[in-house]
Image (spheres, rainbow, N blue to C red):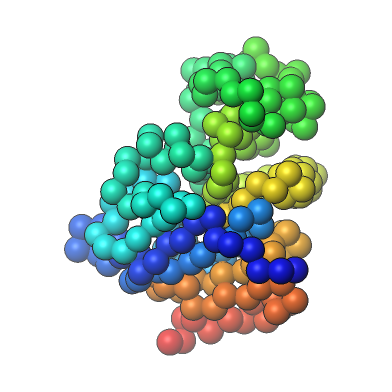
Length: 239
């Protein structure tokens, strides 16, 4: 695969929570039209990095650039308008809205390939539950809804933070198929995953994070097997 230009560049990103230094100069390029998997132990800064990209936590220093636009100081709403779609860990849907109402939150766009019809065809269970309150959906249905809601904004970059967390194997396979479809449509995906087999099966690039920095980055045929990746993650605790 030929090298693709980066859609998003995160360079030397520093983030603090109070006195706690969480990101220590995290740097990651995300090529256009590819799936980049971000893996690592719990607590090493993966969610903080994606929240920094989405504008949900402030960046003390560093650069976050989307296709030539500096996002670093922009609020989350502006980043969303520029095409940063987030499927957050824990889904964070609006419990008092129906499925249809969730899919109506973003203004319609004639250029968005991820129409409501596409969503309902991809997730037929959501079509069946379209008038149901989100609070009445199963965990798997809520996961489908969180992915669908992010697609309604016509994202250039879709960030998925632990999308398979708590899902039954059949639903994990559904999410895998959806990500494959998104890549086929040239959507750029940043996938944060604890399930190494899932991430490995989908990724064009694998970034391993430890202690607030990207320690290893593998691309294409250089991506090692899941056992090696797992060993690299574990070895990070010994630094």
